[in-house]
Image (cartoon, rainbow, N blue to C red; front, side, top):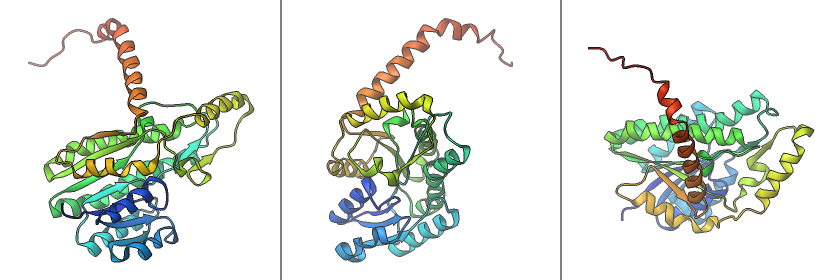
Length: 279
């Protein structure tokens, strides 16, 4: 199998770091980006010219364009564009400031959009490629205290679903990677922003944090081979749940939604009105 060239955002830690190292170890080439160059510069010591460490703040549109173009020019192509940069705002809907919510979407949603828009012309010119977006099972099921992170992933999901239909004719395949809970640094202060809390939500916070602390978490080091199977597949899936805990949760959520829609179907149908087609 020919080696691939990856462009990875958020490669300083967590899945981004693990998958960058695994891709390099299997003989691929990687443009590894992070907000601080020092966080990815050490990869050169281990992998030499196979890796191109780059500083990238995905909230800076011009830097995104320049960095994607630099990586493409350096390697001559980009086969896999993996958007992994993101963080979670921890707040109830009432507690969060609009500025904090906008900042989260600027990274999680618009940051990804910027990378996609910068990369797509290059992928079209070279005749195809893969776009992978790291979403989450909370892109299907929302939880209290992380509603803004969940909503950024719901928007992320819709963006990629539309994109997949738009770019298929150009030989570009799109896959949403939807991890369940994993023991990564995502729960660390570097990946969380805590809004000032209101006392009336203290009990809810204790309940949610208690459930999170006891949640089964997967081993992130066990994920690379699954990602490679998706990337190397001739017909990759649009959505791919990573780990064993996500599918039961998502299945239960959709079964509940369908049951409620069907329970109310008569009322829904009554709102259709009479036929109003134009001859």
